[in-house]
Image (cartoon, rainbow, N blue to C red; front, side, top):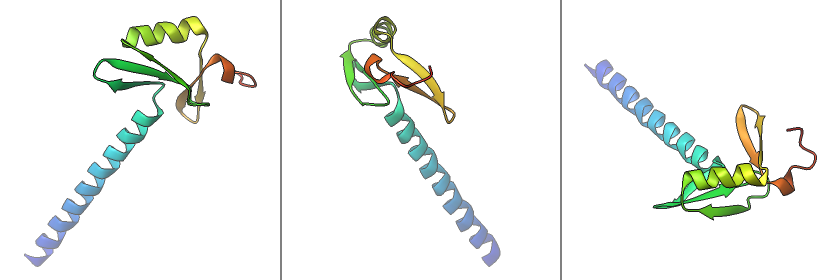
Length: 93
């Protein structure tokens, strides 16, 4: 029975670590989004280079703004990065 108790503790510890790691990944993913939900019904387009952003009322308005203003995206190390027009110099988009 002692062996089973130790295995259970090890399993529980690994489960807690797994949950903690998943929460951390989600937190980092939220931080890196090009569009963040900042209030109940507010969204912000954020440049991955300079960090500057613009606030909008809807997700669609945010995407339309980024398209109309010429924002570009580039795949970098398996993640999409989004750049405002001012930060695009020197990028091979």
